[in-house]
Image 1 (cartoon, one colour):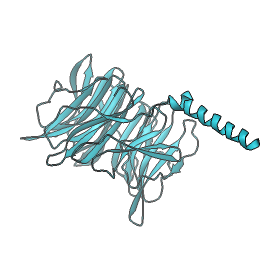
Image 2 (cartoon, helix red, strand yellow):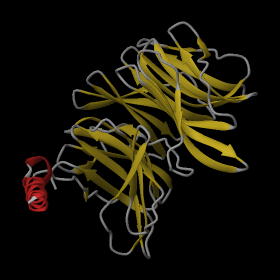
Image 3 (tube, helix red, strand yellow):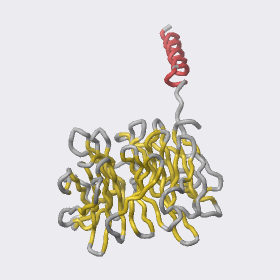
Length: 355
């Protein structure tokens, strides 16, 4: 009798599991292909940023007959289209990072070696020129009330700051040799990662001066990106080198200012620049795929790491998502795909949302 009762209980539990709304009704989202109008290959993707489910911008450059040409695409929630209405769209150059400043879109533009910021307001583009031309333009960040451009000229590294009315140069601590990137949460809370005479360092500006943020980076490491979130949480991604081998690390500090936590997810030597916080609360980033015909993405949630693949692409020999962005309840990827016998051209994929 006990054996029969146990069998009946197991059968009931099994049926409940199969018919439970949370299991049977759950739909696991998958990556789908989004068509992108072709550019002149080979193309390079620089950045992707989204304001919500109905607006995202992707930047980069294509190879025209007379050199590099800037490349700009817009996502309207349904499809990708190319924008060629900005100043200098038909001239040599390239586009860099995209930032949303209030209701405007700001994009860094290298226009034949001269730097400027493109601003889109009320559907029209304008340009804000930099106060000087630099040899290299390394990175750009903008928030309401402030913008920064970092790079170098013949006198060394430069941090150019715009306060809404004009430009000034900002000093960095002694020993800083090179600024590799910059980001900001507000006009009075900016972060940068730098190469110094003692190794990689994270800097922070609190509205007064750039200072060492005293982040305990792993020994023999570098920084790829810093992710600042409205909650105050900070996530740093980079690589640590041990016996000449690189492995990815992530450091996180919650908004309440608790100590930094360092983890080493199984990502190999993945470059973490494209890392974003997904709609599910986990960190997402593209990784090197072990399948030539499919892209690969990593989902990192605390100490758990899982992987997913993009859709299969016929005759693809390299599918490379370059950037990710959260668009409402979905994730949007933008990058390049190389089909056998052709040069790399543009690709885009989406996780979730309408198929």
